[in-house]
Amino acid sequence: MSALRRCAAALAALLLASLAAASEPVVLYTSADQEHAEVILQSLQRQGLAVRAVFDAEASKAVGLERRLTAERGRPVADVFWNSEFLRTWRLLRAGVLQATPASAGAGVAGDFCGRQVACFGVRSRVLALHRPSMEGQPRPTSVADLADPRWARRVAIARPLFGTTSTHFAALHAAWGEARFVEFLQALKRNQVMILPGNGDVRDAVVAGKAWIGLTDTDDVVGALRRGQPVDMVFPDQSADGAFSVYMTAAVVSHAAHPAEAARLVQALSAEAVERRLIEIGAVQMPLRAALPGAPEIGAQRPRLWFVDPARIEASLDRSIRLIREHLL
Image (cartoon, rainbow, N blue to C red; front, side, top):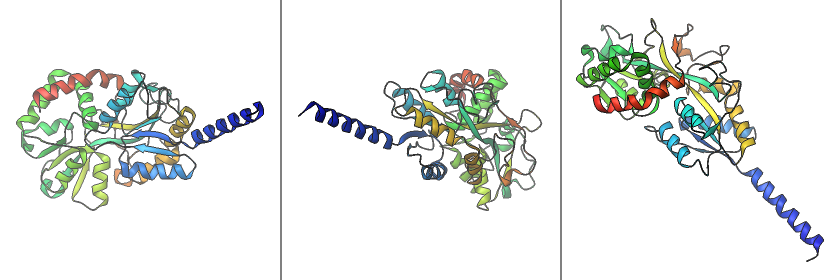
């Protein structure tokens, strides 16, 4: 083979490799509910973004993906992490598993975390789901602390507080209340024989069925029940104090991602205003971080007071709160 032909063959091989790389989808790890995420991803794919999504199970979600991303940090499989909450994103960013991904979405929330380091969008809050028939004529709880009231013994359900938003919420309570009050709360829940269920969806289902009168869960679960006409009411707790503990979605590029440019483009697309609006419409989140966007109709015209906690404070309490939960509640 002549030098010219060898050169031509090499160029052809290089071109084919380039085309193959360009056609490879961006690998997305996400803890968002699959039914909601697929709606968004199908829309983005119609815009020319090729994405292969990897989901996780209901009970573990972000926790399981955090472990997987950490285990793969030497040779990452994922290009982007789209998290349904923020704490594990913060931890992965601090550990160098994720790289800073500047974005306009959510700027100003949680110091420089949102906007400068990750994209933040779409809010869910921790609320009390009430079984309407059982609670008729009963004084309604107005705070998370009310769940420890003996009057609600054997009537309260929570998700297992080692995972997901319940774990994040309990870490925030530990940070805000201090250890003594937090332990007292856990012990009171145990005395009251609180129902500990696998996930937030199970909590909602227990309330809908009347097995629990009160459930601590997320707004998306309760709004879904309301849209199905099920007999539940939704209470945003602690409106006379800090407000309802709230989480927001986050997205960032994985460090040393195989497709960094495409990954950055996907993060920008996920955090766009149109996507945040669509997430509210399909029930994935109920409120926007963008003040100009409306929330879900079930929230009402007057937005509730929301409690956003600095991820650093929650991270500092997470491991300790989990140890205390194991010791005093489980």
